[in-house]
Amino acid sequence: MARTKKVKSAAKFRASAGLSVRRKWLEIDIPQRQKYVCKRCGKRSVKRVGSGIWECRSCGYKFAGGCYLPSTVATKIIEKEKIESEKTVVEQ
Ligand SMILES: [Zn+2]
Picture 1: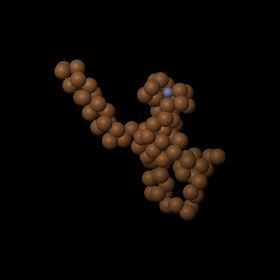
Picture 2: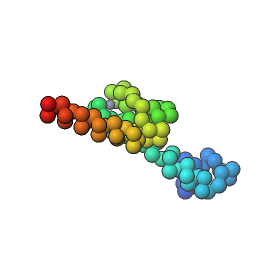
Picture 3: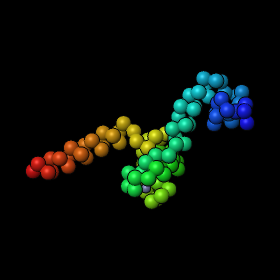
Picture 4: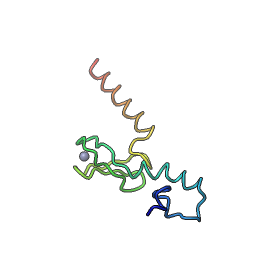
């Protein structure tokens, strides 16, 4: 498998895809294959099960996130707003 080492998972495209396309693919393919920390149980077992759907293999927690990453800019903004709204509740 030494020949496929350089391009890793993009090897399946072989010569049909240009090198720049393969590199671009790796940029999105590698992060989406990684495991992420579960917000519910804290274990590193969140995997992408579909386009924008993420599931924790440990506790079964399923959530919608980014297409290639579990958290997107949008979810970060929502989380920030949540924290801020919780703050105002405490202040009242
Ligand atoms: Zn979990």
